[in-house]
Length: 260
Image (tube, rainbow, N blue to C red; front, top):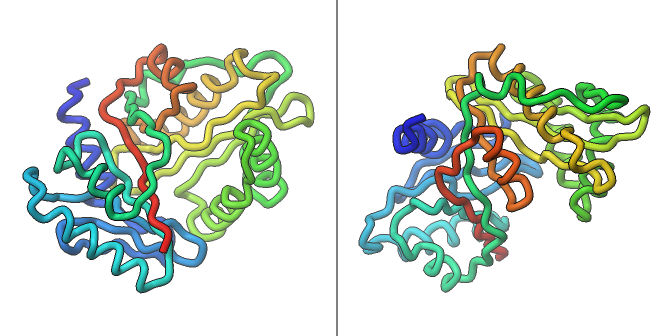
């Protein structure tokens, strides 16, 4: 993989050329940034910025986005990548009142290289999530795995299943009838990247290959639909697993959140 070329392609496909996540959302290109204005309960934020490397226009662009989203009465996120300009953009965001969330690593792998990443352990099966009952199982796993309220995940997956069922693949791993892991994949037509999101396993089932099996399961679906690359915003916990599977760390990503 040519890392520089793939990163440039990712920026072009998934950030500068972003599509709305739902029919009632919109993407706007203004003032040197690309922003996503979510629909009811959707995500709001800045996806990409083409700011001057010197930072000459950065503070004005930041102020403009604060003014725009505050005018809508919405909190929003500036999704900063490690290769974005200017180099001190994160410091400028903090000075303007944003709060930085934990940094993650942008990792990308060839879909074809993940088709045989692994099978779930004996007694565990991977099933598709297509209705509210399945989403509830996903949320149960997510809350146990990450120790946080999963209401946002329930709203997100239910909305995507209702408005764009072809754009999301949601799965849960069951040990018997007990949910022990879950994940989703989001796909945008016209791009070459399928995003792997939310992979989480309850503590007592970690280290048995379920995470890898969920990657392989989604990779097979992505390959069938013509996606060449898999993209993950990886935590420190998942990065070593992904590196062993051949994913490359191409940048970092840090959400900066602004609450009016």
